Amino acid sequence: MPDSDSSKSSHPFAELLGMEVISCADGKSVSSLPFDPKLDNPNKVVHGGAIYSLADTCMGAAVFSLLEKGERCATIEIKMTYLSPAGTNDLMSRSVVLKKGRRVAMVESEVFSDGQLVAKASGSFALF
Image (tube, rainbow, N blue to C red; front, side, top):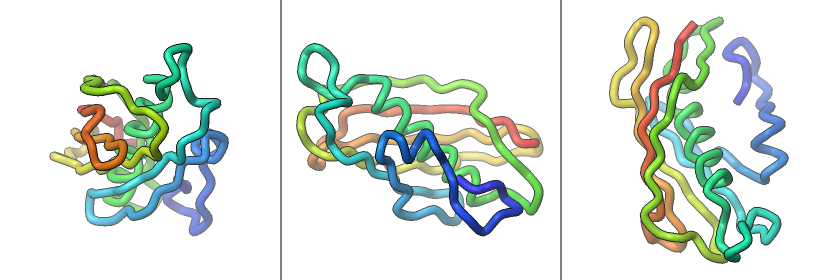
């Protein structure tokens, strides 16, 4: 995500994994992560860390969409619940800001693989 003072998007880690923020406005975002066998764990399913990274990035984008000029955010904590393995399909995440306070935003995210819910996350983000 860009610095809130910049019109140019740059997120090196997301780019490394191949993530894309599809939409980001009004406290909501949608992000995707194309399937790549390099993201698999030894059991031949997508590693939980890749799923977590997608949810974190998508939640950050949702928060970013509500920031004032010059304001930034950073993840404080995320609780991740894995519901089903993600196989060889692209992943998609949808996130929504539940509450944006002066210093902390609360966010939820769902991660899907081929339309099936594979993980849910809730997190808090510092605003500064």
